[in-house]
Length: 391
Image (cartoon, rainbow, N blue to C red; front, top):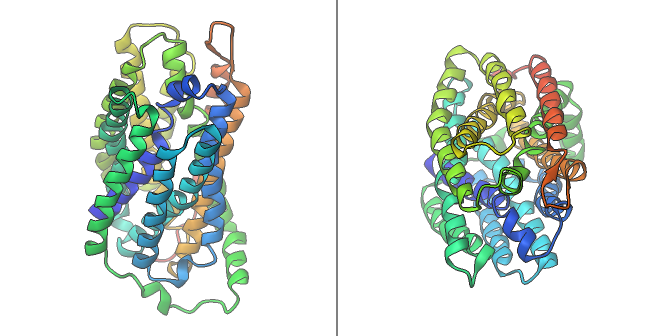
């Protein structure tokens, strides 16, 4: 579990580090807000495409060998991000990183679901999801610190940092990850494409895809533009972003485990609904804030981190239990594709809605908040339709 959490930490950090780097990238690469949204989407959309491709092979190999192979390719792609000389090269490198990073997320969740019983899976998902907290409490602030203290590397420094950490985790994973081949012994369809189609068109699976897609729209329409809004509209310095991520990550590091235990004790759907309802408050505040004292921004951003990321813990525990074990890898790869595709769509749509005035301030961010809440309400409604597969 610790090794899987480490792998999850690095690929989430690789995805998240782009968001606080937004002000620097826009300034140094001379790009627009829409260009920045496309840069984020290059990662997520290729991750979605690679997740679809993964459905053709993910359940036909030892989980360990496949995980380590994908991780090496992810490390190489992240290194290319750090070496990118311009916007176009960075765009291509981010697309490659997404192609491998997106499948890694599905593999981590699949391995957890293979090993941990449903009754304890909320706590297990909380452990893995705590890597999101760790990436924000340690990784993102450190990445921003490196970017600001190494002017000769600038925005490239965080990517070299991720490559270094990932290489260490790969060495540990090579020694500790066990072979997982039990799924290979179960009967499967002779036709690979027919088997994938059967997984994709199952009514319960479709409901799970719709549910997780709405969750992504409800979060990633708002999240990518928080850093830009804080610096341009709330008039806070870029250095304050490190404090936001540090406090938000520290809080979620502790609450992720708590939410996982509550989900196991009181039921995943019930806990999900409560957290989802509460999460609408910081979402609306975030997208409507005007210049206020820094501590008000910090309290709200911390609640945003805790609740918006916290609702994903019971949500993923529910989704991981939808498919039968023999098709779980295929199903979770499709889920990962939906996650990445819809998060990419969310950032692009939000980029179309948001504009910048002559003073450089963002406008219409409040519209994005309304869109996020509407998608969140639909996700709450969809959660009641999910059915758990037999243990």
